[in-house]
Length: 473
Image 1: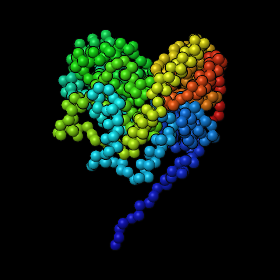
Image 2 (image 1 turned 180 degrees about the vertical axis):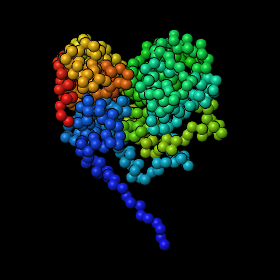
Image 3 (image 1 turned 135 degrees about the vertical axis):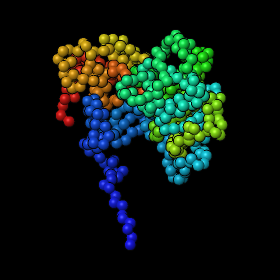
Image 4 (image 1 turned 180 degrees about the horizontal axis):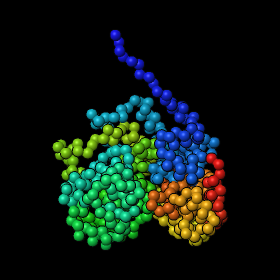
C-alpha cells in the first residue's frame, strides 16, 4: 500500500497577485506580518498613502501615475539611479545565458572580477576583498579580521559617539545608540571615544594598550551628516600607526562616489587599514557588501590554509548575478562621470541650500556635507511652538513633537512630490542623498520647493502638517 500523501499547496500569492495589491491590501499584510510599529510612522508622515509601481532614473512612479523626485536615494543606495538601463541589460544577459549563481564548490569568475575591480579602485595595498550582501555583514567581517590579526590581548574596539555601523550583534556593539542596542547582550571589549576629537583618541590609545581596533564612519550618516576636520583624519592615521591600531573606515553609506570621490577618506590624503562598502555597490538592483583589507593584514588573519575558511566563503557572498550587477555599476560610475557629477552637483546643491539658510535663519540652523551627502539641520522648536500647536502635535505623536523637519519632509512629499530622508539620532536633520545622476534642474526643483515651503513660516507649516495628519485614512 502506498502511504505517500500529496503535499497540499497553501494559499500563496503569485508575483502577479503582489503586483496588483491595493494600498489597503498592502497595509493589511504589512501590519499583520511585517512591522505594525513602522506602519504607524509611515502613516504619521503620510507615506502610507503611496504605493510605488515603478522607478526610473531620479523618479518613483506611484499607483496613480504620480512621479516622485527622489532626494532620499535609499540612504545612499542609488548612485546610478533607479533601474539604470546598462545594469538592467547586464542582469538580463546573465539570466538569459543561464549563468551560475552559487559557486561555492568552484571559483566564480564574477566574484573574482568584482574583487579585482575593487582592488584596482582602492589605494595603496587595500587589495584583499571579502564579498557579502549587506553593510552589517561587511562590518562584521572587518571586525573579525582585525581581531584575528590583533589577537585576544589587543581585541578591544574603539568606536565613536553617534556612530551607526549596523544592527547585527558585532556591528550593533559599536553603534552608539541605546535605542538600537535595546538591552541586547553585546561585545564587551569596546570603548567609546568622541568623534572628531584627536586629543581624546590619543589619550585613549596611550592609556589603554588593549585597544587594537578603531572603527569610524568617515562621514556619520545617522548622526545627521556629520564630518570631522581634515586634520583629524591625519591624526587618526598617525595615532593608529604609532600605537599599532587597525583603523577600519566604514564607508557603507559615504563610499562609491557619494562625497565626490570614490572613498570619502580620499579627501584627506589618508588610507585606512580596512574599508567597508555596501549600498550603492549593488547598483540599486541587488544587495552587495564588501570588505577590502590591506594584504599583510588579510594574509596574517586568513592567508594560511588552516585559517582560510574561518570567515568565508558565505553562501550568498559573491553570488553571480549580484557580482555582475556590481561590476556593471562600477563601470557606469566611471563611464558616466558620476563621481565628478557628485562633486559638482553637490557643491551647487550646498551653495543653493546655504542661500536658503541665510534667508530663513530662524528656521534653518545649518547646512553641511560634501558631494551628494548633505544634511539640513532645523532649529529645535520643541519648546517654542505656539501652545495650541504644541499640544496638537503632542496628541498626534509625542516622538515627532516639535520636529519641524518631520513636518517639512511630510509636506514635501504631499504637496511637492519630493522624497527626503531623516536621521537616526538627530530629529532636527533632513538628509539628502539623491542618486549621483541628479541634474541642476532637479536640484533647482527641490530647493525651490523647500524655499516655497519655508516661506509659509513655522506656524503654518505645523498647521498644514497637523491638518493632513488628522484627516481620515
